[in-house]
Image (cartoon, rainbow, N blue to C red; front, side, top):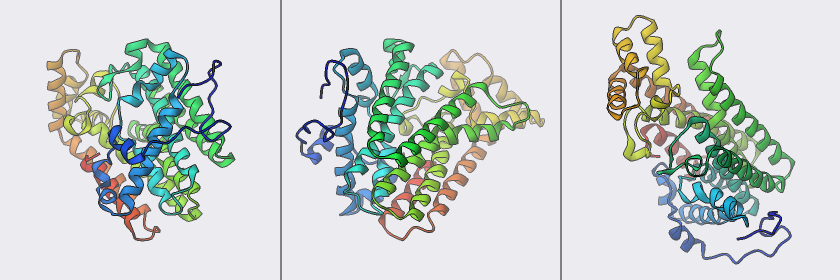
Length: 367
């Protein structure tokens, strides 16, 4: 899809002829869409599985239309991360929540695209902030085009998300705005670190709640809202998303020091090398401060020069073997269990089963 000479963009069906939809099932195959392992219950259901796959194909189509641009540079930079792939967990949660009501409402797909666009926009910014060289196995945008272009691309993608969400009405716009506020505050607080009177672990948990969980929560909430789901269940999805989002990020951070690269796609030690505080390191510092000699020895490696792969591998191995890693997994499981508990008011069925399976999978790391 191309845009007009002044680079304005209008979604299909909003004042311009809608492009012909390709067969969604064929599109799903062509774009390589598949449900994460944590949603195996969805894939195995004869009715829900095809419906979710069809919905995700529609999301992928609208997503690619939304980031397309007539300006060659803007088009290339905006497509960069979309074409690198991704699990699309946030739109998947939106579609799944919609099956508690009427999933065929067109606004559901639009809401699912909004949350994925917002997520993509934050990735461009995060990679600049973290000086990350790779994302989803490809060089990050700032490595290819520089920091300024990467930041502006993130802004451009968020602008496209804002156009879509504005058409969904005031409530959706407020949810999006408040979520974006939390995303920014989470990044700000991570950047400046905890206050002198603030517990580092509590600060870390609040950061990941804002940076990760807020958008996961909004995904399920928006999917439920636009499917006409009763407010009680909208609130269930909001609480579940917040808690499972924290569990997801906790697990992701522990993976960084346990070397589960094949599953996560994340190179072990990335956060250590970048000096990003994660729960295992925070607990290690706490143990060292309490007089744990083993923790102090591991901390010396973690705080040392990790520029070489050998030094990084040694630090990763040492941290992986220390009890703080097991303790960190336990904290992640607590959040996962709490997310499952939040689902108690939800009626029994395939949607509830899928959400429970996903919460379990994030801490067994099948997603």
